[in-house]
Length: 306
Image (cartoon, rainbow, N blue to C red; front, side, top):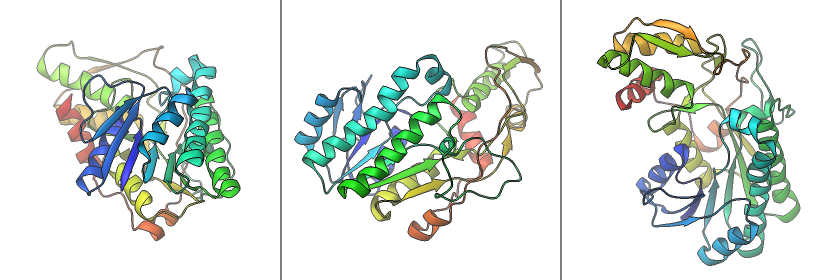
């Protein structure tokens, strides 16, 4: 298939472009901008998802067989700082994609990537949530994703578009911005190990828990859904590891061979919470997907890159 990937210059988008290309698909990249030529993309287009005319123009020109819609604001604090922008991009941007597809390529398969955060915060002892569980977003980022998810599945029901949604829990891996916890810890640990920084690590709340997947497992799920997923359905993507953030820090320090002093940075501190516990029975049944990259390997790869 010729697959248009929005957010192709971003963290997950770059990994997905590689995953698709290595499995025989043609990749067309779309992002706000490209600092360098997009690897694995045969073509690339710069566009703001909030610009409906530009989005329609691209889909009319390209006529993709499928679209993986990953583009949008992904950093929760950035969403809190500019809620109108995050709604314009994450929610209205998704509708602009769907309208362009409805107008120009109605047989295009669509995977709209939202977030496990649409369910709200989880509890470590909770029963896994299936895709029919109520959406209870608790941040403006999660609200923007929940609205996009509802809209996408609504287009499948109302207009017969071949749309699915993916609701992944947190993911990390090589190439992630140090704005996020795991690469931020890895970068500090590597600098201390090299002797280029004092043995002090500045951190946020270490008591939060996260279900964190390897991004390479996540994009494999996206590819399988584009190939085999059933339109009109949502799919959870999770490992349900429920890892304490402080334990991630400890593991990276151990791997780097350091014993730094830990200091809490008020600018990084957010109240403790947990990822929702998600059932992955549907994606396992429909595609055979399961996470396969060991967590230790994920951390090692992030640390090696730091």
